[in-house]
Amino acid sequence: MLSALATMLAFAIALLPYWLEPLRQKSYAIWVVLGIAATVATRIPLYLQPSEKNGYFALKGSMVGSILLFPCLIGAQVSIVVAAAVIAPLLLITTFLLKTTRQEV
Image (cartoon, rainbow, N blue to C red; front, side, top):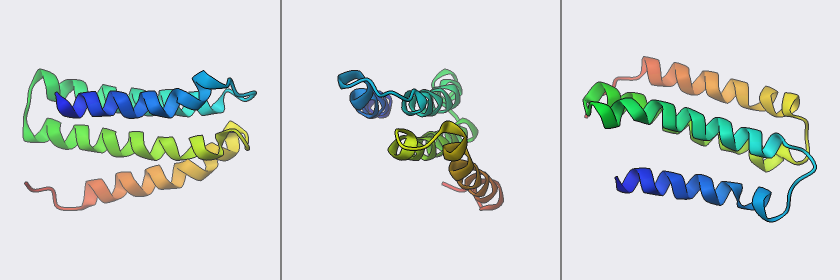
């Protein structure tokens, strides 16, 4: 439960710049929302049925959610297409490494 609260607070903090001073480009908020969606969607199975498999799935979702926050730093300066071009290789590498590495507790 503490982890879920910390995650919600992290995304709330990530949205603070958008709430306090609306940006001209909406790409910042789009990337934060994508990060929230990836994290929440992968955590739901863990909360419904705690298991090692669902734990690793939630870990993957959290990593993807974290990576999706990086474009927020450049989102106000570049278009969403350019930001996507930056983030896509990171997501692919992370997914590949998570699939190929040995997962043990």
